[in-house]
Length: 248
Image 1 (cartoon, rainbow, N blue to C red):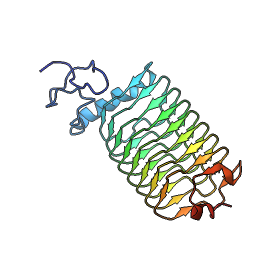
Image 2: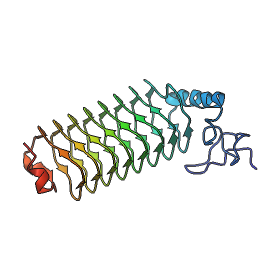
Image 3: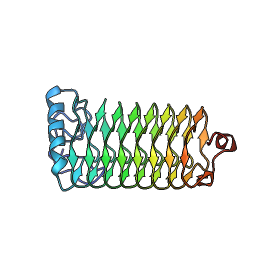
Image 4: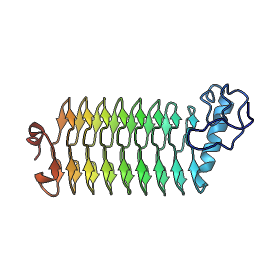
């Protein structure tokens, strides 16, 4: 077996293979890295130091359970978390991403805590799997926010979040309670093809441009009380007539 990490899911890894990995992966890619507290601590030490990297590449990493996570960190360059796996919970509270960030196809096995996070450029969560609660309360997205084809299996909260550019939730599966209460959408928003299998709350949400619900399925109670459509009711595209009657 090669002495180098065998991970090849997002380019060749330059780290050495970990002796305890049966697949020849490094300690950052190996799913066994949470079995030993010292190894788990080392993985997070390495991870937290990368916030100053020109490109912080965590593609395919396995993040073991940790009590701090990336709390309060500022990432200065592009960040890649594509196909990463986070154990319970993933803490990103008060993190600032100064450049683009990708979480495409990442898996959050426990809670995903993104409250008060600032995304200064585009943020991509395409095909992310949230197996537990996903919390984006009061997060600010200055660039495009793309959650297309994400799977939210439990509570998913964007209460008080601000979307200053396009917000895309196309074909997202919301299995649990979804909250967009008092969220602010400054640019176009799309929920085309999304499925809300439980309650969804848009109370006091504000849409300054168009919002599209083409092919959206509301299988549970939908709350649209006090929603603000700056361009008028015409700005809500594809909304079922039964739901449209709830608009102020």
